[in-house]
Length: 417
Image (cartoon, rainbow, N blue to C red; front, side):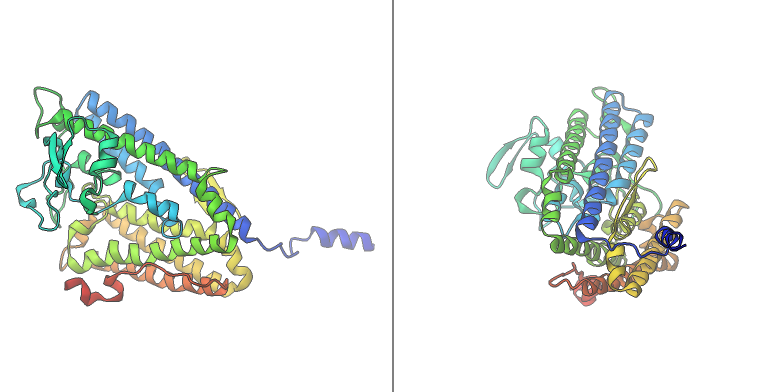
């Protein structure tokens, strides 16, 4: 009888589970990073193929297919942004693939209203139309537009951050062109004829425009290959977070809090709303900002819950930061999970409104109370969850964790000075 009772006890689901360890949580974190960057690479390779098809046979169909491939590539990539801020290897690399906003006149023709920038003499260089130019007193031969020219010479030329020459947004500009609609409806509307070689070329220099688009897409693929390798089994980024478990968990929370607060709630959302400026929207040429915001928010929740759903519907999951926090203080964990759900829901509402026709740049228009509420609801939810991320830091006994800030949240009057 005693043996039966013991067997029943051992089989009982009421037995307490063993607490997860920091090392197990970090293993999940690194596995999700690897999956996210691998999916980003796979979708960028699909974009690369679509770009090749566009260049080979420019048409509305091939241009739209390339645009669709770019949009699909943003879905997994935006979910990896939570690996920024706490991981120096990612931070040192990220500016090459997702820097914004950009002075697009550096790359190609722009509307006459664009104007010369006092802060950036290269803002209207138009390298596609300028095979040779002078940079910091040195003559640059840009006759052949290559990944090496973009990466080594053009990107952040003269040390100016607005000189974004590579990455998703440079490609976005080349596929859509400028969005000249302000806070009115409509995205960029570059014609497929901008890529026609020979007769029928619009915009001029179609051969060089095609070369730039191809080179920048090839460079994006190469950059993503680099980051996939960094999170592979013996990769430098994985080894860095696994080397010191406490520091690794700190990196997780730093990424969550900084993306949630200063970067997304502040620089990407509140600032644009304060200025009523569509130039502050993240995917400004394609009107895809609502999706980028949503998947950023989803990425934050992914890291906390230790689960990422891939584009094919499969899931990468394991021991989570949530479990680690719950073992210390169940109330903090429950509150943070609820707040993460609330921020994702607020971003989903914003996304749904944009999908139904109210684009993000239209939401930024002064006096658009519907758009303002959608944006502020998401901003407030992100700010609220950041306070609970700070509580999780305290519960876990971590010291020296600092999140990115933003004047739009911390010192609003400074925005207008």
